[in-house]
Amino acid sequence: MNILVLNCGSSSAKFAVLETTHGGELISGIAQRLGSPEASLDWKLSGTKGTRALPGADHAVALRAVVDLLRAHGLADALSGVGHRVVHGGARFSGSRELTAEVIAMVEECVPLGPLHNPANLTGIAIARELFPDLRQVGVFDTAFHQTMPPRAFLYPVPYAWYSDHQVRRYGFHGTSHRFVSQQAIAQLALDPADNALITAHLGNGCSCAAVRNGQSVDTTMGLTPLEGLVMGTRSGSIDPAIIGHMAKTLGASEAAILDALNKKSGLLGVSGLSNDMRTLEEAARGGHARAALAIEIFCFVLSKSIASLVVPLGRLDALVFTGGIGENSANVRARVIDQLGFLGLSIDPEANARHGREEGGRVSRETRPQAVVVPTNEELLIARDAAAIVAGSAAV
Ligand code: ADP
Image (tube, rainbow, N blue to C red):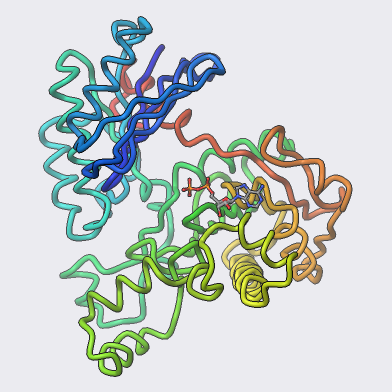
C-alpha cells in the first residue's frame, strides 16, 4: 500500500510516500522556511534530488506543490491513505486513530498542551483533507506509546488538582521512534518478547530516553512538554524551575521570554555559544573550542545520568539503544556515555562503535549483556504502517 506521510511544523512540512509492504521510500522531501521569501520545496526521488523555490508560500501552497510533484511522477493516484504525525495526543490517544471529525476535535482539545506543535499539525490535517477528500487520514501521536506509564512515572509531585483538573502530568514524546527502535532491537537481539528490558535513547535536535519493558514504555525523560529531560540542541532539558521566576525578575523579562530562551537558546547552543549542531560542536571541540567541548561533556553527563536512572523502573537492563541523528552518527557521544555507564556492565567495542552507525546499525559495545546497539529510526515507516493498518480495516493501532 502507498501511504503519504505528512509531518507539519510551524514553518516546515516534511513529506514522504512509502510502500508499506516492503518499507521502500518512493519519494521524500521538505518544504521549509514557509511564510518567508526564501520558502522552498526540496525532494529526493530515486536517488536524485530536486528543488523548487516557493517564495512566500504558506502550508497550503506548499502542500499543493507537493501534490503537483506527486502527480508529475505518477504517485498521487496510487495513494491509499495519508498518515499525519501529531505531536500531542494528551491522555486521549494511546494508539493511532483515523482522523474523523470527532477525532480532529479531540486533537484540537490537546492544543493547550502542545501549543507549539499541534496547531501546525492541525493545519496539515485540514489541508490534506481538502487536497485528498477521498483518502482516509490517520493521526499517529508522539505521546501515544508512553500512555502505558504507571502513575508513579507520569504524576508530578505537585498539587493533585493540577493533574485532575488541568491535565498536568508527564506525557513523553518521540513515542513513534521509541516504539520503532525498541521493536527492531527486540527482534535483532533475539530477546524474549515477553521478558525484556530496554532503554532507548532518541538523540536528534530534540532528545529523550524511554524505559521500555516487554515492548511497553514504563518511563521517559520528556514531560508535559518536550522541554523536560535531557540536554538538547536548543532546549535546556530539566533545570530548577525556580530559575524561571528568578531570571524573569533579574532581566525584567516576561515568563514567555524566559521560556523562549529555555526552548530556543539553551542546550548545546546555550552552553557552547556556537551551535546547536553536534557535528559542528565536535569539529570545534577538536579544534580547541573550550565551550563546544564543555557543551558535549554536559550533554553526555546528563544523558548518562538519565539512562542510569531509567534502570530503576526496569529493574535490569538488557540493551541500550541509540538512535536519531546524534545517536546514529556520533561514535564519540556513544563511547563517552558507555564509558560513564561502565558500572552497569556496559563496555565499548571501539572497532564496532566506529563501524556501526546510520547506514546499517548494529552492536557498539562488547557482546556481554547488557549490550549497546545503534538502530536507525524510521518514524515515517511506522506512521505509514499504522495508517495502512487502519485503512485496511483496524479501528486503531
Ligand atoms: P531532528 O531531531 O531534527 O530530526 P536529527 O535526528 O537529524 O534531527 O539529528 C540532528 C543532530 O544529529 C544534529 O545535532 C547533528 O549535528 C547530528 N548529527 C548528524 N550527523 C552527525 C555526525 N556525523 N556526527 C555527529 N553528529 C551528527
